[in-house]
Length: 106
Image 1 (cartoon, rainbow, N blue to C red):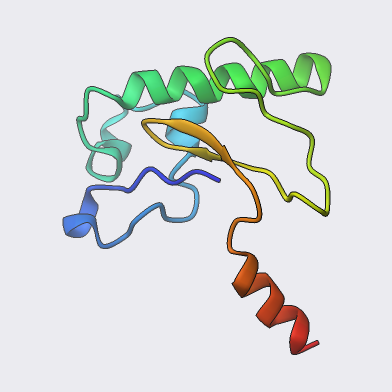
Image 2: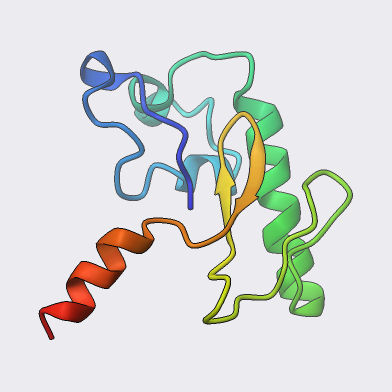
């Protein structure tokens, strides 16, 4: 889950839809994206970690690489999710109360 918040509109967009794409494709310096991604010194570090995860996954089916914590396979019990921001970290049962509420209404 890409959680890095856009600085655009005084940060009101948060980690909006498709914000990760300039990071994944290393197009952060493209003038079209600069207002959306800003100029944080962390941008390139985040971008390289994301690109390496995508490359590792495309090559082996596993996104793990030296630049990020161990990314476990997903299972229904733990629901491990990688949060991607300045820090990359794995959390378990993310938004579990919200998921349970949706399940109750089905």
